[in-house]
Image (cartoon, rainbow, N blue to C red; front, side):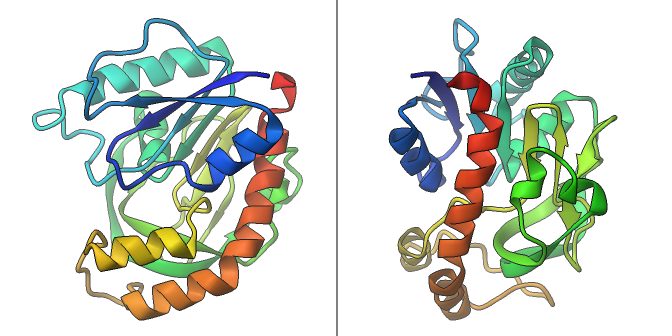
Length: 232
């Protein structure tokens, strides 16, 4: 049994299926809510998961703890523990490794297929993804690929959709989300009011979730099993 630390930035972007996997795999998930506790954890965990949020990685004037979080993430990567970042989490990893996070040419909101690179198909962890898997996108920013990273894949709207550097994995999209969570987000008006070629209506987002979440759950479990195999 291992203790996995989870960084959460806002209440409505939690671990969802990641929590299900942790419970079923016998791991303990410990939460650190940066919006409530802006100080860094006192010790390094056995593994680290970094969730999403609406803030930009450089928005330190409004969220001063972002600088502290990026420093902790860099230390975690240098320590060699498994690190997984989702959406903002992936951007924070890139920023912690000295890369720029910047507005993407298109905002993405909805379920769109992910095309894997050939390198990802051969990667021991990233190959858990099937090619052309529809995943949920909810972002306006993108990031430079960290040095030495294997690119996971792309969508029509965004080149860098994920990466791996050893046991450090960054996913620009949400593969952990469910239709029940999306239903709540839609009803509570938490999704942004964006317009564009890669923005889907709330109704379609919910219906697509019911079609794709089973395959996403299966893929996420396979990915996490490989990511955390040294923790067993």
